[in-house]
Image (cartoon, rainbow, N blue to C red; front, side, top):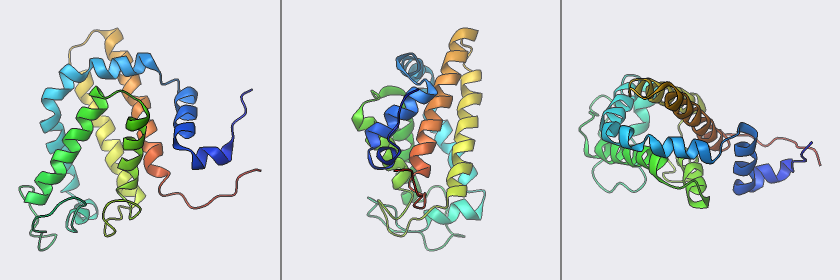
Length: 196
């Protein structure tokens, strides 16, 4: 039985990620499957981004988070939730970020820099990083991750890959999205008492 330092899981990102990857069995074969999907997924990133934003704009509870100034954006902010359209300059800015995120998932090495980036993706949706005005509730982040997961599954199933490659790719992305989800939800946790 492996001994895990539970305090360190909460304080050391690399230790946490290492534990999660070992527990889930996320390894080099999964990374190869994800990178192998790049040639198929990269050309459709714009459609995936548009689908995500169509969904986000279809609910006031998710759309409202695009009214405040986004971190790194210097242009005009929307006047109101009702007036905000997807062609607004700030939404185009946000879409570019999401597109780069999706491309990084399928092209970058899964090293310390990538782990820090995945963690920042979670943190930036809270006041802990980026805009102090941005505080996306966890329920909205879970809804978004569920939608992205389903969109990726549907896309992978539609790629006409052989059955073995399809299975490997789906399993790899499933693990990756669970890893990302952990690195989102950790920034929403309340302090818990852990064993000494």
